[in-house]
Length: 273
Length: 335
Image (cartoon, rainbow over all chains, first blue to last red; front, top):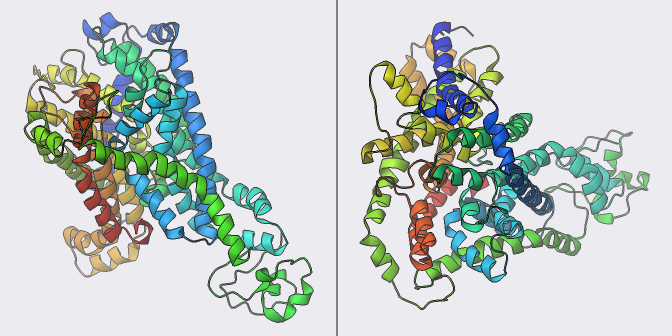
């Protein structure tokens, strides 16, 4: 096991890696804790005069509305994507029907289709449906990437699941609905939870489509609201970083809860990078 | 719950288990089985709960909502985009067919030229550095160490956080006065305006893009490395193979398949990336860091749907090539 590995090379390597990853994150946190004047007049890498003012100011300016917008859009698209994804992925892996391979291919193609190919016609259609600048409208548009994402992840997950339990249930006389409800869904709970978290965080963090579709302050999600602060005349980075950290914390908690499954999915290309 | 043995196994007789019902003669012992198809001796597929006709209907019923949604939200817009790119459609007017006019106008646009060269200067360079950095860090994390899980969790951080947070953070890092990089450079009495010149702006976008995306490569390559048996390295070492020989003869063959999948996926997403450029330079200075997604978005904000579609469509052949390559190299999952 110890063939020629110098532990100091490992240690120095890990230190450099931690600095590379950690320094920008550390800096973002310190800036979120500073007054605007401290950020520019006395730049410092240390969190001198640390204060939570930015966070307070952000929520006083109505940031909660943006958080809720992001939450509802992400939660709604996640629920729909999971229902469609579980049904379709289960059918493709376990049942037999004509066009099975074509559906599987359709999911992969949709998953790989760049959003820039889709957003212009979608914006026209959403306008015509009078859903422009609405959470319902953006939620529908998000299904274009959340449905393929969850279906593709669940396809991979179900393929790795042994069919023995389901067979036993069928032999015991359970019908398809009972088997799904009492066997498949409980057994695949970790996979479904991971698909849910991936879908949720993708929708929660999405900027490009939100920028196109959400224009008024009342409908804007977190990324749009923060990019509007950055693009404003006064670039208040303290405020932006406070908002960015508020947006990041739930994502990281969810992410590390399911890290094991996400990491396994990466090798199969099941998650976006 | 009785543990049933899958039909794939030849199932030697074991009188007490219900699994045994699956071999022909003991059928009478299993009164709970209602469907005759369930006890048909099976050779190929496990779990066949329904008759063929029934199965077809159920399967179709299960995938129908997803298929409809994908056709409406992915299939239709792709075709419509292609059509738009040949028309002078604007917001509120369906427009008329103008042939290749949008594409011809695009070819004469400096922003387009920059977007093409940035496919190499930004996208290509980012991918290359992500690969090298990913390989290096994966090799590091593959060394014997305590608490590998914690180190892997650390390295995932840039990729786990929302993309817009990462790129807003890097915009701040590059700030002329308040930015962290210039504060560090200030210790050596240096100062760099990272986003002012075309070359530096490109380099800055590359740096941020790499930081955000390299953990994806690390995880993929590390997972592949850990499937390589350690004995291979020990044997090679005993045969006197140096580090480079061990890499080219053992490590690389073991990770090559994963690397090609990761490379294609990363290429697709990096080419498709919007936030990295939009949040840091918005394509500037002038159009030095322009990429196709940003170009398309800027056209849309000018209500030029036709040329916005052309700018989006122009990368389609590239994606088709990448996806075909994925099908060739990525194993059966991607075929």
